[in-house]
Length: 176
Image 1: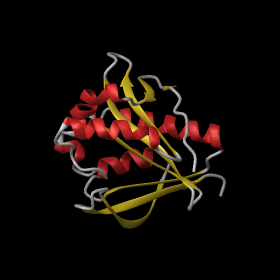
Image 2: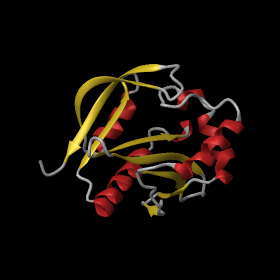
Image 3: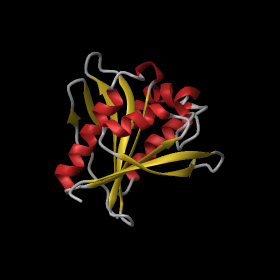
């Protein structure tokens, strides 16, 4: 297991940077939004203390990069995403979440493509996997725009074990 140093990355419209505990108020704006949390692996943050606790824990992540997505036009933190190396599968998985008022604007695809590009260049990554709740086809479109292809139906359960979702899994194996 290793802890990764999260670099600042840039895209045309976004700056991807490490999240800090100072981001709690901005992060709480979307983690508290039921529309955003509806299909996530974490449950809705009903109190900003939960958000603060989560942000304090991110520096302990192993085999994972986690970025905040900052909109260049106004400096607003609008979402977050991660790339995690699944050591047991020798492939990278990714996830993301973004403020409701930023949905369907291409930000998530733009950020995810940049995160994938980073791990390709830094780690030689060639294998990727992602899943989304079956009832959240918009997330599937992001995954497909990032080059992954549907492979099977599956399920995932939230960290707290309260909700389980029917899901769709996608993968990309470059060079195979």
